[in-house]
Length: 383
Image 1: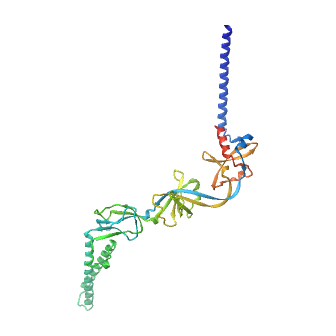
Image 2: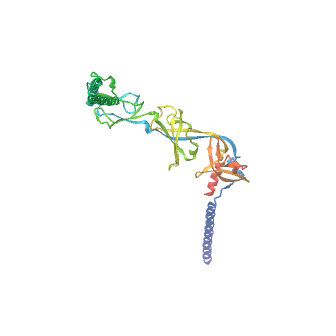
Image 3: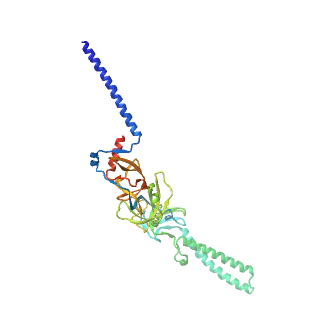
């Protein structure tokens, strides 16, 4: 019985010691992992089997001609100078509207007809003033002849001259008013006086908005239509910060919309806004080389810019890996050890990526195939 008690006591003591030992071992492991993470270890050691499994190959920094293709996206907009608000010079009632929203029109086309009695009065005033001017001209000539022979006083002749000049100025003013509302004063006579005037399109384009309806009375300050001149179509393109220095005014680009990606049109960069917005991008403005009805205001568009080729240093794309917004390559140190090195990349094409200031990589063996696998092993090791 006493033996059993001793055995139970011994067993309990052994368990306690074992537990303490395990706890110390666990604490040591946690400490070592924490120390490893803080040490920013950047090397990986592989076994021969791992090397064969990954299929590692190496390369060297290379000199080559490279061409950068920058892809941009944005929207089609209209320059404010090519959006016009159309109103009537004089008030009246809308008699008819000859266009609808979105319809195309040509320069000089009648957009609407406005009717009002004041148009009749203006034409009458012109014809009456024209007749009075003719009478004043004859009287002035007569008084001038009489004054030459002293049969008429200088004052009478001067009064006749003033009347003629006043009526001539009044007639010119009325003629200009008629021209503005679209009535040719030269062809106006008592038989063709009209109560309606036409609102003509000042250019060829599209109707953006119609702000009136038939029968509505309008004032001279009221806008009847908002018109768009497609010649003012601009492409506002977003440039990511890494590409800002590559986009220049005057560059030729290709643009297309998402509906027809294979149908590309030529355009030219006409402006680059010299500022980076909060989203990390700047804006370039481009203009189509020729009018294209496929592009309309508000449409999302894409663009491609080919940057002039340059002789530079680079590595195959698969040799460059990215982690947490930074780029790296792996150097083969020998003896199955590989070191991760941060690099700054430049332009890239389908095969190679430029390495900026790559002289420090000269004569180093850089992992090509398997670089991403090394990054994953290093990341897992750090965790």
